[in-house]
Image 1: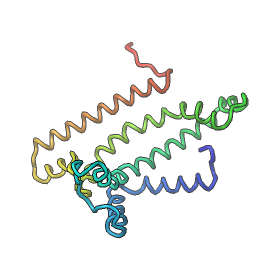
Image 2 (image 1 turned 120 degrees about the vertical axis):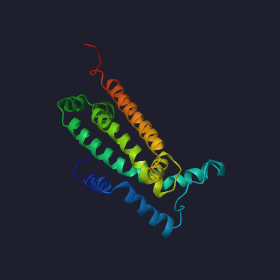
Image 3 (image 1 turned 90 degrees about the horizontal axis):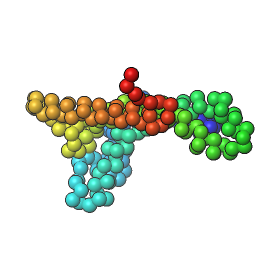
Image 4 (image 1 turned 180 degrees about the vertical axis):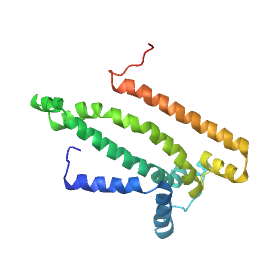
Length: 196
C-alpha cells in the first residue's frame, strides 16, 4: 500500500485476484498435480500420522495447509491493502510525517493500528470459511479430520454424526465471532461494550 501503483503492487494485487478467484479445492488438485504427480516432492494424499515423526507429519500437511490458506491469504492481502490506503490518506498521517517521523515509523506505529478494524471484521467470516473449506481439503488429501468424518457420514446417512458435527462447527463459528468482537475492543479503545 505504501508503494501504490508500482510494479510490485500491481503484481501482488494480480496474484491476490487469482487467489480470490480460484476455489481452494481446485487449487488443491493443481497442487497435487504439480508437486505430487509431476515433481514427486510430496505424497498425493493420506496423513501418515505423528508416530512417524514430526517432520513426516508436517511434510504430509504442507500441501493441504497451502491449499486451505492461500485463498484466505489473498483475501486478507486485498482487505489489508485497502484499509492501509484509507488510513494513509487521512490528515493525521500528514501530521505524523510533518513531525519528522520516518515512513517506516508512520506505517508501523500509526497505520497498522488504525487499519486493524477492517482486518478483524473479515477475520471472523474467514475462520468460518476455513472450517467449512476443510471438508473438501480433507477429502482430497485423505486426511482423517472432522471434515472427512462429516462427508462420510453424509454419504452413509449417519444422521446423529451429521448433527453432532454441524453443532460442533456452528459452536466454533459462534466462539470465533465472539472473539472477533472482543478483539475489536482491544484493537480500538473507542469501541466499548456496555449495558444500556
